[in-house]
Image 1 (cartoon, rainbow, N blue to C red):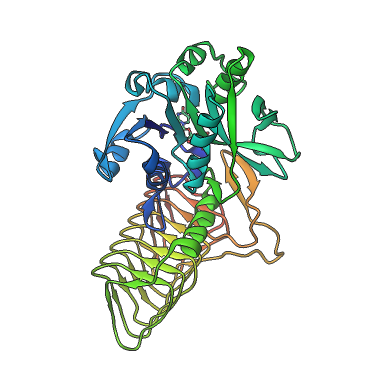
Image 2 (cartoon, rainbow, N blue to C red; image 1 turned 90 degrees about the vertical axis):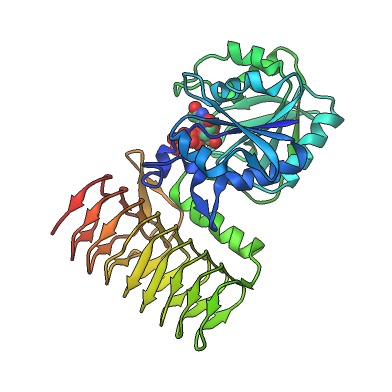
Length: 410
Ligand code: TTP
């Protein structure tokens, strides 16, 4: 059986982290998101077909042509938007067998696929999907089920409890006939959920599996912090492959990659993951749920907490990075500080596609795009985004979002 992984989306809601790259290659706990999807599909499939479009070369460069010894093929999404178009693009590659489809930007455990395959086979179904029960479906489509079958998918049901569609499916090749008939949705996309509704109307048997373990749909920046916390809490093993100088304190579990040096006076409370060839300390404080990538520098008098710092980035002197996401190749000037809490203790709101959204978090720091440089003594308000490749001059207070490629001076 083959797996089709959908990775052609633009990831608009995840800007500035997707300013110059697709979201599926963003690293959480130092690994590209799409690799977690592929790892959990791995036991059930013999080939991966990745549907790409936006910044496709970066996905190809990241994954290469095999994953754990199984071939990886890339297909470009055909013109048109939406998940149905994305699935259709794999038509010539899936052959005449059933195949699994998964969004490339979600996190699930392997049980989801195990249950999906067994529901499909047990019910001798034409298609199957994975569902999860939520008390509030305002962000999801509601999947109606009856007597062991899916009987319809309703978009925008409002604040009601019920089953949500997790973005993991099993189809037979006859799905392509229904994709061809799928109309454009209200939001101007060809949606695979509309295709499934057409299949149900035509009398096809759509089975489902109910999944109750951890799942994350990585749409907005704070979803990356949630996933990072989950992965470090549940998967991290204490393993020191680098060098730890005498006088550094390490409270497990902490993973430190090859070539990384932790210098005297560093105080690290796990769970923390640090990649390869990074320099940490002397005299810094790294608190739980922090991931630091490869070739990073966390220097003297720096505190990092509950944050993601991607590869080749530096917080070298007198920085505080709390509940923040720092892209690749970022340099924070001495004294650059992220604020992560409002005085009125209300939830931090973040502008997503031009609208303010409640992150649901009391604590959320900065979201800093790739290649950003800040000068000395820059202060960044909670939930503010700095576009990739921007330069923030010394002493600037970043109280609003900064578009990509902008120079901001006092
Ligand atoms: P979405 O998260 O709905 O879309 P997106 O990734 O473009 O993000 P945003 O809405 O923030 O712009 O996509 C769900 C999955 O489907 C995701 O894995 C990307 C994939 N996808 C495609 O492959 N092609 C498409 O045309 C669309 C819309 C999504």
